[in-house]
Image (tube, rainbow, N blue to C red; front, side, top):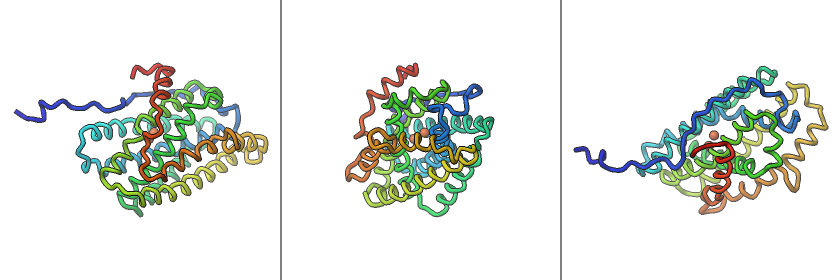
Amino acid sequence: MNASATLPQPKSSFPVRRMDFSFAETPKYWFFDDPFMSHFMNNLSSLFPYGEKFFVDSVRAVRDQVSEPQLKKDISAFIGQEAMHSKEHAAYNDYANEHNIDLERLELRIKVLLEWTTRLSTKKQRLAATCALEHFTATMAEQLLKREDLTTQMNDPKLYQLWMWHAIEENEHKAVCYDVYQKVYGGYFTRTLVMLLTTVMFLGVIGWFQIHLLRKDGQLFNWRSWGFGLKKLFGPRNGFFTKLIGPYLDYYRPGFHPKDHDTEKLENRWRERLGFSN
Ligand SMILES: [Fe+2]
Ligand SMILES: [Fe+2]
C-alpha cells in the first residue's frame, strides 16, 4: 500500500474564492465622485493583471524546493487567489475602456517592465521583489479594511466588493511568499535591498500612471481634484500613504514577519460583512 495515501493531507490555511463580477453599471468617478481618487484606484488596478502573474511565477519557480506539506498547500492557495485577482481586475480594466480610461495600455507597460525585470534578475531577486510587493499590497489592504472614511466613499457596489474581497485575501495570504523566501534563501541583505529598489520603481510607476490617466481624461489641470487627492493620500494626519510609513519601515527590521501585523479580527469582520462562509 502507498504510505502517503494513508497520511492526512493538510488543508490550506485560507480558501480560494471563485468570483465573477460584472461592471456594467459602474460610473466613471466611483471613488469620492472625484477624478483624482478614482484614477488613483484605477492606477492600482492596472498593475494587477500582470503584476500578480509575476508574483505567481516567482513563487512557482521555487516551489519544488519547499518540502513542508502545509506551506506547499498554502502556495497552491496563494496561486489560486492571485490568479483570481488578476482575472477580476482584468475584467474591470477592460470595462474601464467604456469610459475612455485606457488601463489596457498601462497593463501592457507593466507587462514589458516585468518581462525586462525577469530577464535581468535571478530567481532569488524576483522572489524578494514579490515579498516586497506583497508587503505593499498587504499593508495597503489592511489600511483599506480599517478605514470607513475611505470604504464608504466607494459609490459602486461591484467595485466595493472587488476591492474589499481583494483586501481580505491579501491579508490572508500575506505570509506565504515571505515564508517561501525564508525557507529557500533567507537572509537580510537581499530582502531589504530589493525592497528599497522596488519602492523606487513602485512609486515611480504610480506617479507616471497617475499623470497619464489624468491627462488622458482632460483632468490634468483640475487643481481642486489634485488638492483633494493629495490631501487624501499624503495629508499629515490621515493620509493613506502617510499612515503606511510605519508599517512600511517595519519591513527593514531584522526578524520581521508579515504576521507580526495581526489582522485576523479585521479579516473576520469583513468576511462576515461580505457574506463569505469561510
Ligand atoms: Fe492579489
Ligand atoms: Fe498578494
